[in-house]
Image 1 (tube, rainbow, N blue to C red):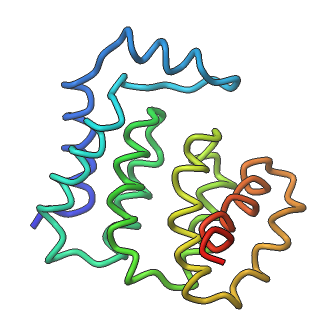
Image 2 (cartoon, rainbow, N blue to C red; image 1 turned 180 degrees about the vertical axis):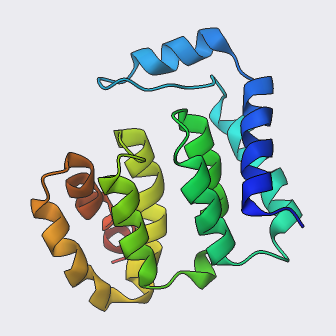
Image 3 (tube, rainbow, N blue to C red; image 1 turned 90 degrees about the vertical axis):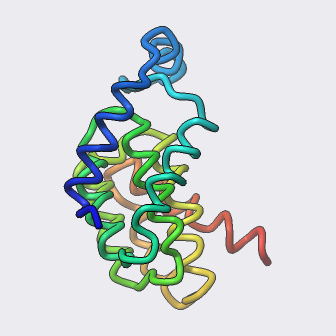
Length: 166
């Protein structure tokens, strides 16, 4: 079974190998803030995440997936963050309240510092957690007054899934 560190290194290597510099430039031009990308398409990225998840699904827990996020969220490229998010989402049954603190730290530390990263993580991860444990919604209220715009955005988009589900 690969460790989070091993899988993170392998993920970055695979992303570099499949990079499309021209597409990466078009992706970067789409954002107001500076972002870096490898230039992968969304379907190809989902397929990569699925294949990596298949290798660890029976051995890993949500803690391992969070560790992978810790490692891949430090990468500047959007796709590295995306793979980590997609794998974490597959461990939703193991989410606990402690995940709120971890997400907040990723946001505060600038590891998720654009709308695509925040919107990719928070609706599914925090939204799923809020559906399961609605009382946690009160912990997001102070986020709306944060000095960090990505923490503020997370406080909003975390409620998309619960609102859709009524």
